[in-house]
Structure formats: structure tokens, C-alpha cells
Length: 499
Ligand code: DCT
Ligand code: MG
Image (cartoon, rainbow, N blue to C red; front, side):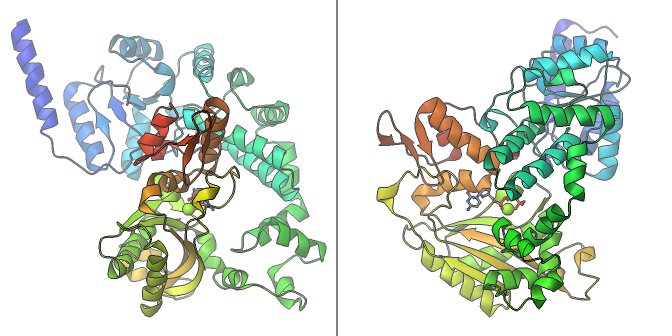
């Protein structure tokens, strides 16, 4: 059958309407937008796969917009596919991943996006691939707040190594070296593909000679000798063990190491050591806290906190922040921001919530830090300083029965609950946007946003406010978008802030 142009238009419109009328499924994986290439796949298979992915919580688009992050094709040769995509309006080729259908089917089977491996990529000849990564690297900003970093890290081999080096530098109180490795980690995490050869690093910011030497080692031998040496070092292992306890930082760990202590048993047996309340709780719930918290557990906790909050202030709001707001599947704690419609009720709310949690038998440990808020001292120049909002650090009892997955129950100890770390912070409602931005993190993203504000805009940003030094005024913000706009930055979604 031959279609006239008008028939074709009608058919196209009909198809678009059909697509827009489809059942709306909840999007679980917000940090990626998939586009399935119809070329060679055929329209009915494409529709089938689209529906399947949407049902599983993936966001699939029919149009090749700038939002697309993952292009999936079947039986397409690399060069032909690239030409076809350019022809169909793909603009920012460097930031999308070109993936074979195997990545898609594996992700459907797993019920979540599987990590992109090089076997999933649709690759032309090697030279083209290298050039492709180089071209994208020229645009990489030195500031994390100008990069989009999802939880998908294509360069884990390198970033794991850098994280060891950063921690080692921190233990040795070498803050500059620590920051250098953290910045390099953050740049590599933002790349849409894996670094495959030394040439790929050209044009990338924040990579010094030392970081490049580590990458070169890994590229050549699959590992870094320096990192291996640190991992095998007794002192590093002991400091890592001690700092893994809630309440014990590098300074205390170093002190204990110098005393000759190497194990928890030795710490407990040493009569000259008096643990503070936080450290006691850290040891008591060590195994539980070390395990980390899943997204399902974070959601269950949100319900518990909301219930307690609403018993004190019925119209208060509870907002999940920290790593979970950035789309992470696991975290070491759960961070919530509480706000009340009336400024001034914040601290009372925290006290009340702690009381309710205690009555319910859920409070295992609490530490309340009252507000040290002094408006005349704003904005703070101490970028790394704790903010001044009232907050509390808690360890709560999470009943296994609250979770759908009974496998979450602590089988080993036969307990039907586990201890989890929760942070609550309660800024005045007028400061909500700044607190939300600050507590969403990541730490590197926040650091770079403050650095960008100061060096590029002559502004001071912290968890409380944004100050324009040239105009000598505070810039008000109701939303995070307002803050990005004041700074002249493109908005970066929370799930793109995993720097
Ligand atoms: N933060 C802050 N001031 C603090 C502590 C934290 O502004 N005194 C910010 C930085 C990141 C965010 O709050 C959450 O902190 P964490 O819970 O330590 O980090 P996370 O990104 O949530 O990671 P994790 O999954 O390990 O909890
Ligand atoms: Mg957290």
C-alpha cells in the first residue's frame, strides 16, 4: 500500500497519540533516559521492548531529544548507527552511550540498569572510539557543578584506586593531596565512557602527574603498585578498621595506633581509654551500621520519621536528602530535612520527634545539637564547617517486618530488627533551598559549587545563604533552581550530582 504525504502525517499523529495515551508507569531509574533505535529492530519489537522497560521503571523516550542518555540498538554497525543518529537529530553525541541490545536485555532481566561494560558498547574501530572520548573530554569543566554525574560510574577501576589514595592522604593529614585525588575521582566519575588508553585523558581537568601515573599503571598492568602497597600496609588497615566505627575519626585512630592497639579487643581491654557515648554506640551497633542501608529501608524510615513529626507539628514536611535523593541504592545513613511552616518551631520539633521515637521504643542512640544560628555571622567563609541548623544524629531500631523483603531480617543474630543511622536537620523554612542543596551533596559537588561561586562569580555560598560580594547583598532563593540561576549555572538534577 502506498501512503500519500497526508496519510503519512495522519498515521504519524495517530502513533504519537497512541504513545502519549500509554499507561503511565512509575519511573524508578531517573538518572537515565533510554532511546531504542527502530532501524533494524522494527517498530513492533521496539514498542514491545519500550513497554517492557517502562513497566520495569525505566524511562524510555520515543524521540531523540537532548534528554536521552542511553541509545540502544540491535544489529547496527557503529559507523552506520552514528550517521543515522546524527541524521535523526542527535546533537550531543559525546554525552550519550551507544549500547548494544545485550545491555538492555540484561538490565530487563536484572530489573535494574546493569553496569555498562565495554562488551555492551557499540564500537567502531578503536581510533574512532578514542577520538570520541577525547572530544567529549574537551568540554569537561574543572567544577563538578558544571558536570552531570549519575550513579553509573564507567571508571570504577580507576576511582576505587584514587579513593584509597585519597584516604591514605587523609590519614597522613595531607589535605592537599587528598583533595587532588578526590577531584580526579570526581572527573572520571562524570565521563560517559571508560578511559581505555592514555590518550583519552587529554584535555581532562584535575589530573596531575601523580594521578596520571596511577592511571597509566592500571592501563598497563590492570592494577596500581602504589595502591596495592597501601592496601597491604598494616597501619592503613588498622586506621581503616578504627575509622569504620561511628564516632571514631582519623585523629583518635592514629592515637590508638600509636599506643600499639591493633584490634577492637585491644581497644576494649585498654583501661586508659574512655569511650564517649557516641563511640560506645558505634561499637555496640557496629555490625549493623557497617552493613549500610538500602533504599527500601530508607523508605521505611521515612514513614517512621513522618509519623513522629506529624504527631508534633501536623503540617511539617519531611524531605529525604543525602545519597538517596541522588538515586543511590545504598547509603551509610539516611538524611532528612524537617521544616515547619512557622519559623522558630524547628528545635522544639526535633526534641519532640526524639521523645516520640523513644516512646515507640525505636531510639537506640541520640545526639541533639541545638541551633548555633547567628544571622549576623552569615555568610560563613568556612566552606567545610558544619552548618548552624539544629540537628540530631540518631541510631534507630528498624523492625524487619516493616520491609517487604523478609530477607532483610537479620538472620545471623536471630534478631527481628537492626540498628540504622539517621540524621535529622531542621532549618528555618526561609533557608530550606540552601539546606536542601547542601544536604543533598555529594560533598565534592558542594565543594565545587562553593569554589565556583567564589572564583567565578565573586559570591559566597554555604548551607544557609548566597551572598553577592560585588553588590553586597544576599540573594534569596525559594528553590534549588533559584540558586543555580543566581550563579548562572545550568540546573543539575539531584541524581546528576554524584560527583
Ligand atoms: N553535609 C553537610 N554538612 C554536614 C554533613 C553533611 O552539608 N555536616 C552534606 C554533605 C552531603 C550530605 O550532607 C549527606 O552527607 P552524608 O550522609 O555523609 O553523605 P551521603 O552523600 O548521603 O552518603 P552516604 O550514602 O554515605 O550517607
Ligand atoms: Mg547520607
